[in-house]
Length: 153
Image 1 (cartoon, helix red, strand yellow):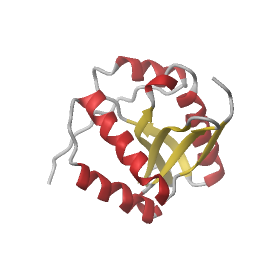
Image 2 (cartoon, rainbow, N blue to C red; image 1 turned 180 degrees about the vertical axis):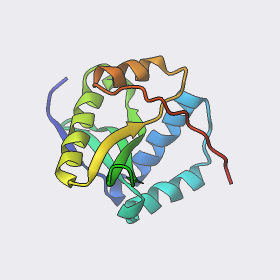
Image 3 (cartoon, one colour; image 1 turned 45 degrees about the vertical axis):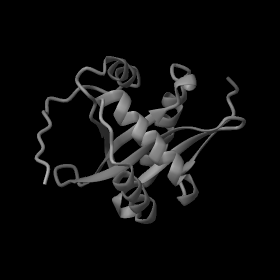
């Protein structure tokens, strides 16, 4: 694979690609079929309102968009800064295991350092997704002692 990758903020013209990536990610990692209409509205809402988060894109010079992720922010009063949550990670199958996610994550870290108000990066991963967990450990991330709880409304 050529090393010619561009990392950039997603724009509205990336909408359909991001919807497809999110749809496929949910199917692959959680065996869930998302409602495409709701998903499309959610992605579009994020693209149009930076306060909800932002998407980063990895674009190959020949193949086009090959990976993406979303960042949302959580305020930490304990640290007087934001945690950036890495979400909706997707890399096209042909590009997995080739360092694409590593380079995309490094771009996130660089942006977080430049932000000046980011105190750390966090993500959650399915318990059974051992491949992803190994990738996160390899990047220097550590498992926390927190458990995640939720209630859908």
